[in-house]
Image 1 (cartoon, rainbow, N blue to C red):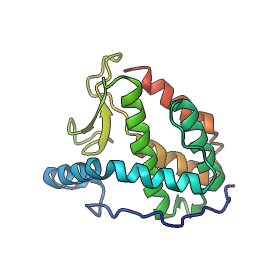
Image 2 (cartoon, one colour):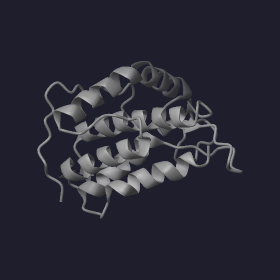
Image 3 (cartoon, one colour):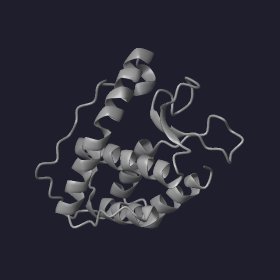
Image 4 (spheres, rainbow, N blue to C red):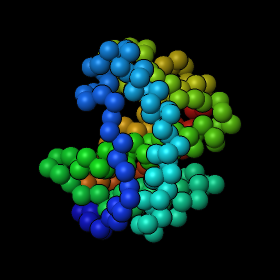
Length: 180
């Protein structure tokens, strides 16, 4: 089980624009939430870098797979369960890690991908969520990558001792990137 004490210091959680799952809100609310997230993305990434550095995690992202592995290792070593889930602050961390993962993927694919609000189907898990899209090496035009949800699920699984290793998140990142 995880348990390394996290030094939170000045890490600030950004309250969500909506208080329920994005698939349950109106399109206007989902668009407002997406716009706000994209607007604060740089600040959230700065908050993450400071948090990681305070906790001894190298933040050089020139090698994306190595960055993902280091951050995933820190999550595995640090996240603790709250029942069958994780503390709310860890969902903020997952958001910030996910925003960074998405931007790294966009950077690594030379801008062929982009952040979008997924609106292609109300029954899709990604419905009205911020996702990375534009993948050309797949026959599914709706193919998307939700790095925030992936990171949150990874953190939950790690907190529950469901044998998550740092390579699992890094390998998944590399696999998805291969479809760009």
